[in-house]
Every structure is written in structure tokens, then in C-alpha cells.
Length: 357
Image (cartoon, rainbow, N blue to C red; front, side, top):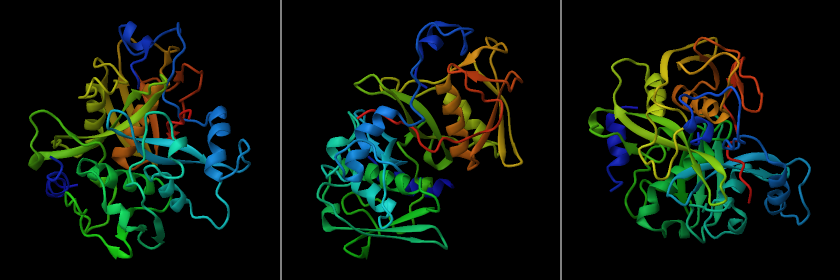
């Protein structure tokens, strides 16, 4: 995305630090002395029991056929994060409509969202209609008049939450917003521009690196970690504006920023220590191959799954390629603390942050 677009989009706006990682000299350990709690990337059985009942409208436990879908919710620190929820969708229901209903603040589902998270579509909003243009992938969302009544400080988060939720669905490339059937060309309070279809290029949880000017900046999206009040870890995507790389390899710059760590160290945790280096990154045969180097790593050591998933998510987000192969000091026979193998290319997790309700 060029700097002009980012200036236009931002001018209006006024994993986990694992004990094993912090206590050692590098990222890796030959043994795991304490249980490791990486952000959840799979369905939790207990969660299915707790959440599917409200999402499918029944009152009895998990329902057969429930699938995981992601919605973007605001956490207690003011960051949007993807949250996986199990949903049983009947044949006549539109998945996107249901996700948007879940995202209405103080709506019918708000009491069953994970602790510390809130929905961002303004309270009282009705989802009047949803249409996906199959030719260009643009989804049109028609919302009721209540949508225009919100706190100005929430405006960008509202736009980002809707955009990133809907573009997580297959076939959706962008989003247009209507109110009572009329297209919005800008948000009504702080005038965030909506005259073009909203895509993930608008970024999420935007921050700007120190000393960087928007006119010479490029966006990279990174996945850090945060923790709920219930001590559960979850991934948080952050779009950081950095000095435009001299080469076209923005993905390498993204992982170097991931290694640099979060700017907001009070709310977000690093997933990787700064002594790690990116020694190579290339794409071929539909796979991005990334080489990391750390002097502390030896073949056979466990590698934190939080680290691996954060790298995979960050690489996939910045390249548009969903399959990633990670090599550590040239070694591809990598296992995480759960003894899961990463020796083959790994697809970007489709559902992350399956938190307990």
C-alpha cells in the first residue's frame, strides 16, 4: 500500500512471554520444566460446551455440526483481537449475518463473549441485510440507523472489527457499509473515509515506529501475545508503520519487527527474544520458507508453539501466502512443547484464540 493511502486512512485517528523463554538464554529448551500456555489455536472441548448453546439458540450443550468462526472483539487494553467461536449455522442462515449479530455491543450474544472482551458494532444496531458480490469479493453490509451513534474514540476500531471479521470468511476481499440502504462515504462522527471498499490494507491496531514519518512509512502486521484476567493467553495483531524497506522484502522486515517486540510492553508480550535473526525468506511452490538463527538452539530441542504460530501468522499476513515452512539454524525437524511436528509446511491457523467463556 502506498503512503498516500495510509495518510488518508490514519490522519483522522488523533507469544506470550513464556517462562521457559524468559528464564533461559535463548528461545529454546531441552526440557519443559513448567506447563506452557500458548494462545489457543484449536477448539477447546469445554468451550464448545459453553458457547455453542447460545450461538445456535439452544439450551443444551454442544450441537452437532458446529464449526469455528472468528470475530474481532476489543480487549481490556483497547486492542482488537480475533476470537474463535463455535457456531452451528442452519441451512437458511447466512454466516456473515450471524457474525455481525455477535459483534453488536450489548446485543443478544454479548453476555456470552469471553471475559475482558466487548463487541464493537454500536448498541441497538440491527443487521438489515448482507450481500456478497461473488465476482469481486465485495461484501455489502446494511445496518440500521443506530449504527451512527457511537463514541468517536471507537470509530476506527468499529471499522477495523467489521472489516477484519468479514474478510476472514472465504471469498470476501472487501467491505462496504450502508445505513438503511444508503451507502456511507465516511463514518459520521470522525469522518473515517468509506468511499472505497474496506480491505485488510486499512491495518489493525495501528501504531507507528519511533522516528518514522507516515509519508515514508510502510505497514507490517505482527502477532504478539496478551493475557486475559483469567490468565489465558491470546494473539493480538498489530499493524506497525515502519520506515519503508529499501528492498521489496517487506515480509523479512515484518519478522524483524516481530523480533523487536511490542511497543506497548505493558499490554502486549513478546513471542521471541531479540538475539534471533532472520537469515533468509523466500517464496516458491506456494510456500514461504523462512530461516531463523539462534545460537541457543540445538536439534531436538522443543520450540514454543506460541513462537512458531506467531511467525506463521505474521509471515502469512504480510505475504498473502498461507503456507509457511520454518527452519531453525537450517533444521526443519522442529517440534513444539506438545511434540507436534513442524517439519512440513504449515498452513496459517484459520481459527485462533479459542478462549473459555
